[in-house]
Length: 344
Image (cartoon, rainbow, N blue to C red; front, side, top):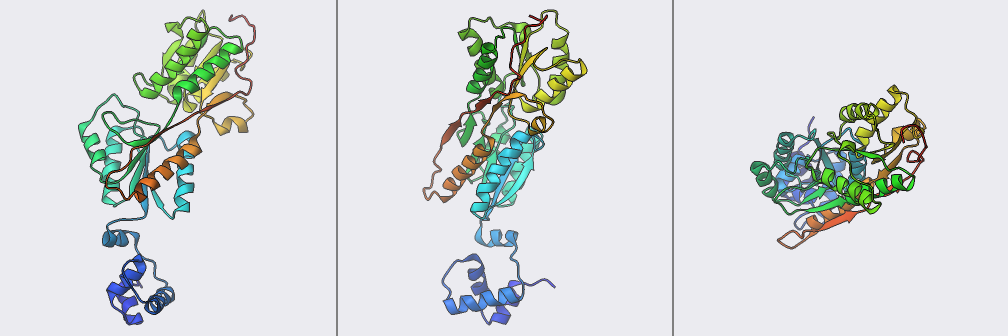
């Protein structure tokens, strides 16, 4: 049998308004009366409906989190950081995956708004160059705090936490140069995406500082996914003047490159050196020591959640806009080493 507020009020000998005040911790209730109501709630094993509570108080204790690739370990760790801080503040999370699709993201925003959530943490789809007025209008008119995680929204001004992708790519390329490589290919993400542009800037900066010409034949663009890097790597291995090292700018793409190396019997780093962007724990498990740029993913989730909570608690009528940049760390495990072979 479903227990209602009316049942509690009848047994406790109080009004439904009094029960509601006790449940929502709002309004004055004598301590003696409060204890009597709480005792009845416990006896009847009553669990308040989060939806009903949000309707009565016009707010909930739920946060919306929107990510483009839930199967990507990068976002898995971000969600872990968000969840840790949310738990500390007794906040619930509704998680939405968009498959990096702007229409799915727009739908998720509308659904979350209907749920009367208190705030949103979002990594926008990477298509910053594809302006969508309906999308921007929906995001700006939510009426709740929004925090961006490592993604920008064109023509907007939201608080956010971002990774310095230029530095990460610069450090990775510099490490390959320091190891003795001069022919360094880059397998980057989709063209014109900000993180793609930033990572190419870092790659180019490291080459220029070391008087190494940026050759177009060594610059490749995929789509951040496994299959694109697999095909590109197959092409690289067939080049007459192929590079001795490859910088792969996403964790999913590095898996595609490694598969191509394996199929062509390419040993890392004897036949080809490689550095990736973002770690993949599975590679450690199987004993593949692949060097990588480690984005502070869990920290990003934690800092982003704390920023959102600060905005929720902000008594000012206008949300304070904050932007924080976190710096990635290069983790060298040997795959960047230079081996003097027939390819050089």
